[in-house]
Length: 229
Image 1 (spheres, rainbow, N blue to C red):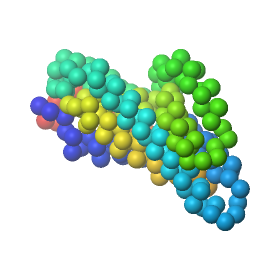
Image 2: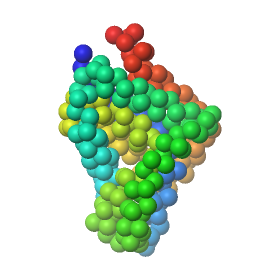
Image 3: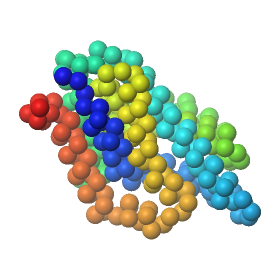
């Protein structure tokens, strides 16, 4: 039995879209600062768009790279019902449930998971600081590529899913679709769309999105998946 790729890609996009409130907290400040650093005048909107797109392309590219590296280390999970595949699927489901509970502000245990990447981020964050202030798209691209390694429970949750894909390419694509799902909110933050950000930050929205992520996590768990096949 092989992974349901036709479900995984759209679902990865939806996870990114639903989890974008978490992205606003983690990366939204950087996205907004790219716009504030630009002088207002002729060509402002074009320069703003180039910086925002470059930053997010770098960020999503890093997600795909991380997924490819994870997939290389878990090639034996090509069959998601193998012993390793069941373990990875269980971890992915539990992480998604934890992320949903965190987004709904019911339980913040996902923060302990985010600490896993803290040692690596301590080495990368000084490099990110050297790129500021951002003056051109190349710097924005590099900053996004570094920021993609920021410890993030939502990213780790989706990575667990990506590790179940049968090929390195499909794992990278899963994370690319996840990153594309986060893009609307990140661009909205950069363009200062305050009405959208208020909606994303509302407790009601967070709880609905969190509940849906919990459902995704339950669906991912091997027991739930086996009974559904």
